[in-house]
Structures are given as C-alpha cells and as structure tokens.
Length: 77
Image 1 (cartoon, rainbow, N blue to C red):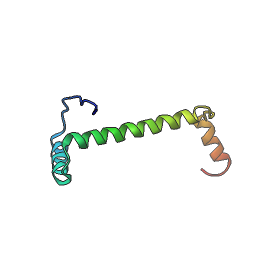
Image 2: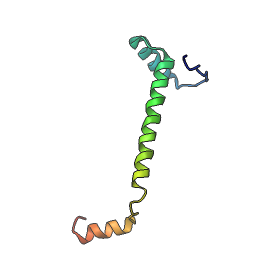
Image 3: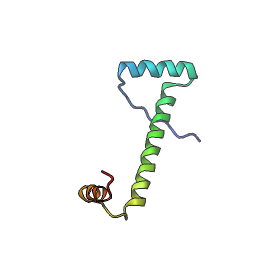
Image 4: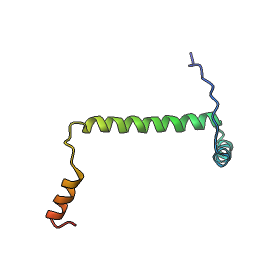
C-alpha cells in the first residue's frame, strides 16, 4: 500500500520556479518529484556529514594558534 503524501505550500524565487518548470517539462517529471528528490539528496548529505562528525568526535581539538606556530616552526609559513 503506498504511503500517503503530505501537502505543503512552498514559495520559490520566481527565477528558481521558472527553472523548475522548465526542468519539469524537459524531464517529464512533476515539480513535486523534482523538489522531493532535491530535499532527499540534501537530507542524505546532512546525514553523511553528521556521521562524519560522529566518527571524528574523539579526535583531539587543535587550537588555531598551535597549528600556526607549528607551521612557522617547520618553515611552512
């Protein structure tokens, strides 16, 4: 049984809306499909970023000043 869809009102910049309508016509996909795909991809990217943050949570924090001093000491700057 398909999952019922939810309705939302979204306001787009006029140029963005025009681009979406053109892409919709050229790809024979609805605006809803295009927006759902874009939001899904953005949320998936956020999930990937959060997973990376969790993986690196145990890494030590480096103070900016220490990094600059180390670069200077090693002749990199």
